[in-house]
Amino acid sequence: MEHLDRIDLKILKLLQENANITTKEVAKKVHLSATPVFERIKRLEKGGYIKKYVAILDAEKLNKSLIVFCNITLKEHTKEIGNKFVQDIKSLREVTECYNISGDYDFLLKVLVKDMKHYQDFVINQLGSIQNIGSAHSTFVMGEIKHSYAVPLDES
Image (cartoon, rainbow, N blue to C red; front, side):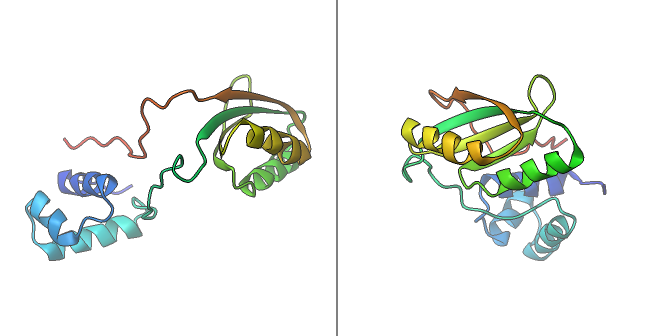
């Protein structure tokens, strides 16, 4: 990993806050001209520090207001079975995040659906069709307190 200086970190912070910010606006905020800022951004993209730029949508306005965290335990643990599970989960559009975790469960899924009826249908018809799931434990979000996509950065 190359060394990121204070300006690189400030640029990353600004882009996390607003990916639509212009290079000229970033340059003004970091006290450089546009050309070196443009070059720094390209270097950060090429180095993989910036993976991609996206629009963050309002799930509730798009009728996907039920957030469910689903803990999954597999019956068996082999490389082939694990890889098959991962591929199956990647194909489910309702699953917006999936983590391989330690502890009592093997995977943690974040699922976005319209309502409880749709979640029930998802569990029965989609999760239920994936082989080797031993158990699924669902936790329903009642209210969102904090939600950030930003990676915490030290600007020292």
